[in-house]
Image 1 (cartoon, helix red, strand yellow):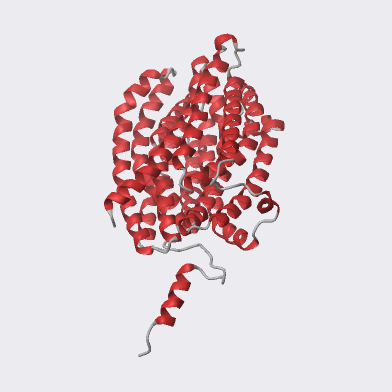
Image 2 (cartoon, helix red, strand yellow):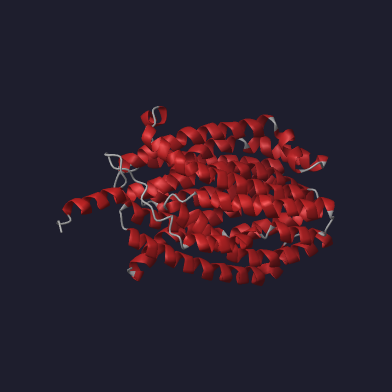
Amino acid sequence: MDKREFRKKLLSLVLPITFQQFMLAVVSASDALMVGVIGQDLLSAVSLASQITFVYNLFLAAMTIGTSMFAAQYWGKGDKDAVERILGIVLRSSMSVSFAFFFGATFLPELLMRIFTPDPRLIHYGIQYLQIVGITYLLCGISQIYLCIMKNSGLASMSMIISSTAALLNIVLNAVLIYGLFGAPRMETAGAAAATAMARVVELLWVFWELRKTGRVKIRFLYIRKPDQRLKKDFWHYTLPVLGNELVWGGGFTMYSVIMGHLGTDAVAANSIANIVKNLIASLAAGIGNGGSIMVGNELGAGRLEMAKAYGRKLCHIAVGSGILSGIFLLLISPLVLQVTDLSPTAEGYLKWMLVMCAVYMAGKYVNGTTIGGIFCAGGDSRFGFLCDAVTLWCFTVPVGLLAAFVLKWPVLAVYFIVNSDEIVKLPAVYLHYGKYKWLKDLTVRKEGKNSIDNKKESFRKTKPAD
């Protein structure tokens, strides 16, 4: 493996994707923190209402991971038409899911908020947020899928520019609309949602502008109306386990919010800040995982299996080092986080120790994000993540967390420790599974219906001289 070439590819993908993920996390943080300046109840309400967006993003994440599986390999193979066919298949599904979430957030917001909290004030503020933010689901169903295609077709930097510009616009509009600056109406929680919607409109318009350029992967309405059945079957064969994984993991994570949401507003506020800090620092994990997935997928699609294997090994080493350094960094900035947040003394005491637990969490997050969400999925090995999360979350952290919170009545920090231990618990199983190399697979399909590995084996047998 050419180390210089590896570093060049890695940086060209990881840096823009990391920055893009970081900006998305900053937007999420700004929604909560800016309304949190007005009051702790508003902070808690926006944090809980954002769980609906979180669940929606699970479906979107599964479809973008599935898109990346095939787009990376077909792009590495040089088959642009297949990438456009995959795009049509995914858009057909993403728009259906987006409409369902739009309908729920717009017309059933009170019902959704009652899932997370019985507090009438939090429900009131959450309804204001959801009824406006619902429109963004329809917009993201198109823009996020195409931005994923751009990352996999040599345009990761442009994808980052579009997404990050929209994020910056969102932050600016947050300040203007939440606080009523420059003559704008003071909308508070509704302002945070309106800012998000306006930024998403700009993002989608920019995506449509990029579509017009020569050489770009196009949205073909023919491929949306009449999807390629063979590709569709292959896509869902590998993507359904990813969707199961996302729902199992996300459902467990949402249950964590339900558990913390019933432990009082101090616990909710501290948990909200801890999650914001954790997500910001974990942006690099997403960058390594997503960028690594594209790199490994390109090599697999081109038939270079040994190179893909070498890339995977190097990415794992990087993930371990990055996870340890990120945990140390989180500990170093913890005093600053405590200083700039305006929480009650009880909530501040919770947050102090929550941040320590998050630092330990980082090591597992980086390794699992790179392997389960990156390397394994690059070769279509998506079932392992589903099984791993199903066992870890639903056989351990969720039931034990519920037992500790509602039956044993353990302290808030003890409950938080339990529900944040999943990434560490997974590590032994992830390490053992990586060494089996089941992820080393070419998903691209030849016209004769065989994958490229089978074709190469058959070609070798035909050209091998007789004994």
